[in-house]
Every structure is written in structure tokens, then in C-alpha cells.
Image (cartoon, rainbow, N blue to C red; front, side, top):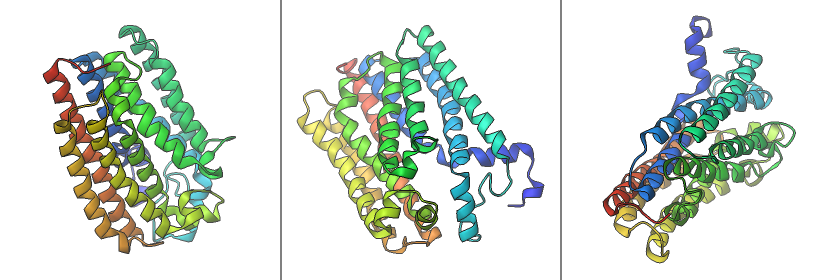
Length: 319
């Protein structure tokens, strides 16, 4: 990538990292699927709100995360100039002030959308839920809390991506804050979100340690982090199956089993990539995380489609 040849639009597109968006878009889709399954119909208004809100919220998270991590990103570029991709602020793609202002503006836009949709859709809790999601991120990466530096950032990411996001979008669809089908499958979703959060620290293990960040990878090392990631990636689909078999108000087994099979099949490919994804093997780590993301995202997509079909077929699930 030649910095001097990048247009302003290309610089902002690079900063927004669209390739990373499925990590949060897929749980949002799942929330809409569960909400529509419970309601017995798909609300076009709620779906439109979800799409627009996610664009603003993802911009808020991505841009301010780069702003908050600018020092440790610069450190990584100095440590591994040929081992990682250019960083938005340290490599001069965009100035820190631009990311800060754009990120804050996107956050305000997301809150305004939640307020307006709450009024239009008669969902008074949309704004508090949207604010809660932003507070989770603020506690994750911005001062003074910065739990991603102090320790516990992975748990916050698990709560935000695996819990708050699907709950917000399910609520937009059906008006129930904690619909039974969402609650029944929530443990599996949280476990998978935690697996993704753990794996995200692998490629930054040494630079994060040098920069003073306390993550699972910096504290326990590469091998232990991979073992935990792989265990969680297997546990998540099994929790879906257990909920379907044991919980009284849960989606039927026929809607859950195929999604679990999809996730577990990609996990098998994850295990094949694991031995090479050692510390500072950045290309191998990227391949490892790609299989993990496929396991999580394609599993959740399959679950969303099947749960939606089950709810619409039954005329609505338990709220």
C-alpha cells in the first residue's frame, strides 16, 4: 500500500476496516432473527434501524479503538515493521484528531438513531440499550477505565458482542427485552464471543506486553490462549444443543443441530491450523483466526436462518 497515492476516500475506507465488520454484524443479524422468530413476523422498520445503527456504531467502535490504541499500535510497527499491516494513525493514513472527531460523531449519530427508532417503533428501551453498548466499549478501550489494558477486556467484549448486541436487535424486532429463545441460546453465543476475543490478542502478544496491556495472550502466552480459544469454539455449539434439548423454552433441535454441525466442522479446520499459529507467526495466526471466524460466523448465520424459520413456521416463539 502506497500512502502517498491513497485518496481521502481510500484512507477512510482503510480506517473503517470493513473486513472486520462481520464480527459484530453477524450477532446483530442473529438478534433480528430471534426477535422476528418470537414475534412471528419480520419488522422492516426494525431491520432498517438495525442496519443504519450498526453502520454508525461500528464506525464509533473502530475509529475510537484506533485512537485509544495509537501508542501500542506505534510500538508494534516499530517492533515488527514487516510483520503487520500499516496502522491508521502511526503510519499517517489519518491524523488522530480526525479519528477522534469522526468516532465521537458516529457515536452521537448512533444514539440519535436509537432514540428516533425507539419513538417510531414504540421501543422505549432502544436508547438505553444503545447507550449500554457504547459504555461497554468505552470501558474496554478508553481512559480512565481501559480494561483492555488493565485486564478483563476479553470479558467486556464477550458481554458487548455476545450479549448486548443481539439483545438490542431482538428487542427492536419483538419488543421483549429478554425473549426466551434468546436467553436459551445466549450462553453459547457468549462463549463464542469470548473465543473470538481471546484469539484477537494472539497477533499482538509481544507488542501488547511491551506496551503494558494485560490480555490473556500477554499473561498466559500463545499456546494457552490457543487451547482456551479452541475449547470455547467447541463448547459454544454444544451449549446450543444442550439448550435445545434441556431448556423448556428453546428453539427446536432441528433448527439448532445443523448450525452446531457447521460451527464444529469449521472448528476442526481451526485445529488443523493451530500448530503453526505460534508467537509472531503472523500469517499463520491470520489463517487460524480466519477459520475461527468462519466457525463462529457461519454457525451463527445458520442458526439465525433456522431459528427464524422455526419461529415463522410456528407463528411466533415464546417471549
